[in-house]
Amino acid sequence: MTPAHPEPPQPGRRETATPTASDTPQGRGELRAQPPRCETGPVTASGTLQGRGELRAQPRRRERAELAASGTLQGRGELRAQPRRRDVADATASGTPRARFAVLGDSLSEGVGDPTPGGEWRGWAALLAEGLQPGADILNLARSGARTGDVAGRQLSAALSWRPTIASVLVGGNDTLRGGFDIPTVATELHTALGALRATGATVLTACLPDPGTVLGLPWPLARPLGRRMTALNDTVHALSAHHGALHLHAAERPWATSPGALSADRLHPSEAGHRMLAADFHALLAGSGMPVGAPPRLEPDGPPPGRAASVCWMATRGTKWIADRCTDLLPDLLRLAAEEYRHTARGTAPLLDHAAREATAAALESLGLSAARAHVPPTVPAPLHSAGRPERSATKRILVPGADWAAAASDSSGTTPITG
Image (tube, rainbow, N blue to C red; front, side, top):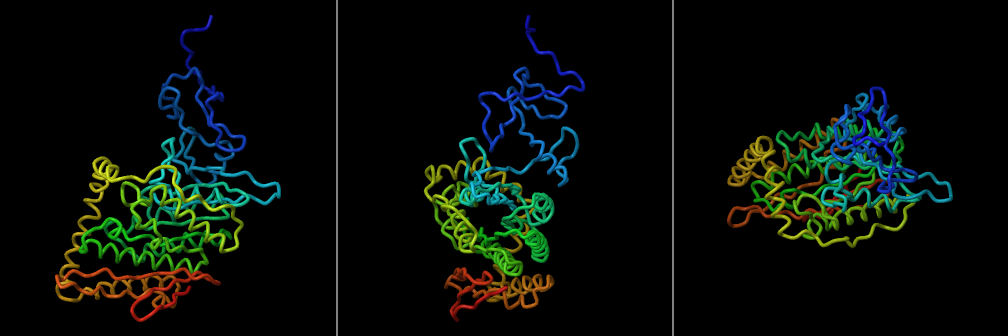
């Protein structure tokens, strides 16, 4: 007679998950682990069972060995949050090795703003991987809230142990939205990450990021200090990308950064359409470099863009927490910067703030061995004043120039100044 309830597991016995009809293929020859039918939800010693029929995904045996080598396994039954890995295509019959694509960065590369029906994030990196030839394995290490120190630390260590052939480093936006933003620290950490990845022979992708003050439509006393920080970050990323031979995309000037339908409900991350645009831009960049690629990612989204109702809902739920988290960090610093902006604007000395930011960026780059860094920093045109005393937005355009190195140019009233690595 079958007992009414299963016997509890005995000490020293390992419960094995039996694949069921509901198992979902994750890759070639891989099934998602399912809990045994007899389990009804008790939490085990390892803390993996969360409820009835739910089991936290565990790495395969080969992955566990790789994770242990990179220092992510802490002990028996304990595992840190792991990066998502997708097999997006099978290798062709030609025997050409599949690409190994490591994704480093923050929520932008994690895929925030592009949800899947299953509730996970997809994002531009997964869309790009689908267009690589003869296929690609992707290791997404990007995490929401990550800063340059996180990328140069834990993420870089895990990526190097995985031995990628392609790596992307898109980070720094969270640094500009924190109190105590320090461009020398940001430059040093980016220099470490890019240098280590390029030393392995990997092709490295980087990008300039849009100005959050402009995207959010903040008042000019708040927008200009944030814009100054983002300019320093982008100039640093550009100079280091040229120095290390990375493929650099000026994403800040692309449509997803400003088009309403290309932004998600939070107005800070791309929507599905925006992620598709970004993936297509990187696909074109890789194709232009001579890397074998397949068809470019499709630009048409699967669903409609988020409307105003979605933005209001986000602000009422998650947005208030996002703001509260920064009330004790960014807000005091930003209010100080806004007061300084007001004071300098009233005195007509606002260009001094721009000059100081350029000098700090140049000094940070020079400290890393970029001897001509000051000549590499794009000139910033001082914003003229309206009759009401409000500075107008300056139109600075950067273009992508193909050649031995990727270069950029900043256009002002005096013409175009090339910037090289």
